[in-house]
Length: 275
Image (cartoon, rainbow, N blue to C red; front, side):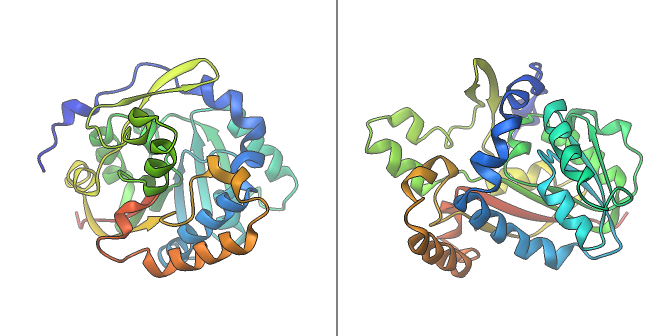
């Protein structure tokens, strides 16, 4: 499929405000939720394969710092960035309670401003769809190619294009536009606490083309194929055994062609091409 970079133009609206407003509740709503933990565990299986102790990793869209701190505990040095000052404040509060200050640095930076970084980095992580809020993927890919060492892996967990749970959930409620909001090629408007911004849902082939100038797609897997999106957490709070079973089945289906495309998220594994 041919993708025009013009489709993914830079987003003018500042993304700090809506994510600032949810920073205080983010860990409660997602990080420590049963669904959030189940989906994060799937991503971490690949992180542990690709990111080695002693390496220096760039994390984009770090949120409240959960992944950065987990990497630091494994001996990885992490430079972590987020567009939201409140998210960075929350991450730094977590950091004060752990002896990891030499391993992790949290700072405010938008993805569109990666030209300010020098590198080099051994790898990159962007977890749970923060990248979907950035429209200039070609520009981001070019900057990452500049600062990532050849052979380094870039792990991007983005929204899946086809989320089975979401389609069924909203179709049963008669909300047809929302059920299929991820399928359209144009940016989709999202509203958070009265602030609107655009989100894109690239397919795997589109994402591969947008990153093709400096990266090779090594593989990809579905995340949350049977484990539902986090907004369905209230329906599973009393069904831990059911959720555990769904998480186990997800681990079996994550790389299965024809099935992995139905996940709430998609984990892309890119390798930096040799210079």
